[in-house]
Amino acid sequence: MSTAKKKKTEQKLLKAALSLFVRKGYNGTSVDEITRTAEVTKGALYGHFKSKADLVLKLIDEFKARFVHEMIESTEREKLNALGKLHKILTYNARLVLEDQALCVLPTFMTFELKEHDKFEIALKNVYQEYKVYITKIIEQGQKEGDFKQDLDPELAALVFMSLHDGILHQWILNQEVVEGKEFVKTFRKIFFEGLQNTV
Amino acid sequence: MSTAKKKKTEQKLLKAALSLFVRKGYNGTSVDEITRTAEVTKGALYGHFKSKADLVLKLIDEFKARFVHEMIESTEREKLNALGKLHKILTYNARLVLEDQALCVLPTFMTFELKEHDKFEIALKNVYQEYKVYITKIIEQGQKEGDFKQDLDPELAALVFMSLHDGILHQWILNQEVVEGKEFVKTFRKIFFEGLQNTV
DNA sequence: ACAAAAAAACTTACTGTTCAGTATGTTTTA
DNA sequence: TAAAACATACTGAACAGTAAGTTTTTTTGT
Image 1 (cartoon, each protein chain N blue to C red):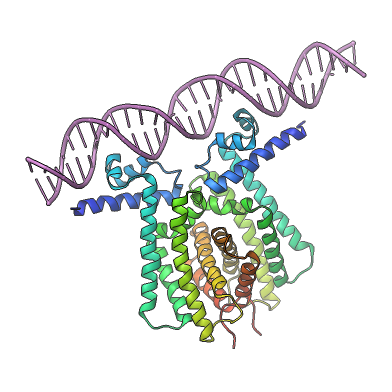
Image 2 (image 1 turned 90 degrees about the horizontal axis):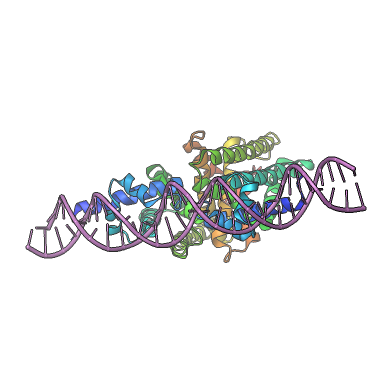
């Protein structure tokens, strides 16, 4: 039986790895650095994880659990119309960004640095796929209910939604010191739902 | 005096470096790999560039010239209203993505892998800043002309525009094989300018 | 209840490899 | 024929992973 201490060591290692990966990249982070940050030694790391790459896969699992499964569950708990659901998702995500920024950034940085590693790519596409299917269903619902424009392909609209999401995170990382997060998100919502153009 | 051959070697090295950087990341790419791809030797590389990092800085210069300066110049050549300008920019960018996808992706991948390297970060922020100032002016113009919603902060709206842009690129990289680019961009435009919601 | 034995968690010290960069020599161009 | 462009062969440092030994925790026999 695993003790609480074991779990704690694992968590320390994952936390250290995540923080370093998103700051310095996967290849820019050494295993020694991870163990130093987590305040354990190399042997301990290789007792818990079978390789450096394994750390990333475990982190993706964590992302999936918190950012996809929990999000869907939380959104489906209440009976909302499609518009309400999308708003709920945006609020949920905004909270997670504040709570655990590093984890939020993980898939994006992985897309760019690790897209040639098959194992990572498969795990990552899997996560995005699940997310996309869910958003697509919501957009279809919104079209059926007459709230959303009918002449949009739901799947492509879902991709645009996700694009916005990724892009916002990206720009927010670059402009964190300068831009007020709340106002930024408000602007984003207005444009996404109502458009930039006047409707006179 | 530099010969045509020298320029050619430089271009071969930059092209090889770019292609490898965006596929395998900066730290995931070795100098030997770059020279092998460019079909020159190490001595040649270090004759043209003072370090591996120098390659990245030169690539950012190239990005800036083609993606910011040329884009602005091309957009300003015709007298367009704000809406026309934004459409022009999107068309211009779409073309560049097809022409030189690797270069388009460069700033995004840099944001995530190299954000702790001061030199890179400064060069990168500089590029985004110039882009942002330009888009902000267009949005202000659009508001003055009455085409765009008045209650949006022009700078934040510009950031949303750029976010969309980055996000679209990100999602397109992930879904290239599956998604039809033209339709994706069309959907994006419709949502960005007119919104997802019906205006009944 | 409590030691002795077994197992799990961890540390230390090391290995072979790969890396960015360089020093020196050779070829090509002007 | 001089100087610019390039090639070769090397260096010391950093790297992921491991083998062997030590400490801590859990299980077991009485």
